[in-house]
Image 1 (spheres, rainbow, N blue to C red):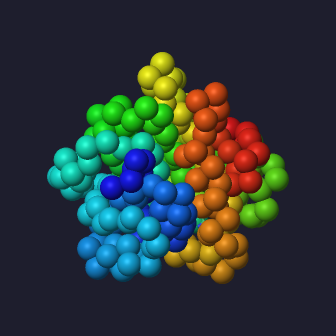
Image 2 (image 1 turned 90 degrees about the horizontal axis):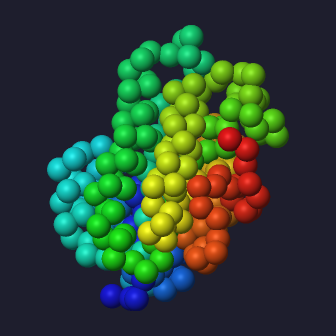
Length: 238
Ligand code: NDP
């Protein structure tokens, strides 16, 4: 066990796997969160360093409780697990798309974060990074994706879930500021992962996004909290 420990949720593939690998390279003991044992174990085997499988379905209270019981002290929590089930505007969305999306992208972040707070409070410099999305910004005009430009209501369930996650990032940062926590949100940019067909076909290298997340896990005590940053470190408007 290294001096510093980190948990990345949804780390069996995509951006999360890169974040876990890069944190292991930084010298962390990394808990690779995965709801599937086989997929999680394969990811662990591909990471150089001290990586350990932590079976964790972020939408399952029992799974969260079991996982939290296995972690004594945690320095870094990366809430990365996320889903994108539809690219439709609200007028064409089924409310079930919203419920499913919010279960993973919003409610689960609250339940996972709260379950791991006791372990995070044992860290001298606790850091929480929420993997959000630039598409969750309601004002950002430089987003290159036509579906997601403010003024176009595409991917409403996903984008509003990330807007809610951004708000929660601020509220956690405010609540935990006096305990020395840094809580920030990351806009990883469009990345080639299995998140949705758009990401798969048009996305860039997920390793670059992971570097942005790792930067936020390594913030010094005088660093920002309650912020929303692009993968390259520039602030993103809410
Ligand atoms: P992937 O689909 O490649 O990875 C998503 C990960 O989340 C998988 O490991 C998946 O596990 C996991 N996951 C989903 N639901 C659960 C659950 N209930 N419990 C545990 N794990 C779960 O997508 P990305 O790597 O792209 O996504 C990572 C994050 O980045 C997400 O929050 C996404 O919204 C965000 N993001 C991605 C962008 C992109 O362009 N790719 C752009 C902006 C933001 P499993 O294999 O079991 O399904």
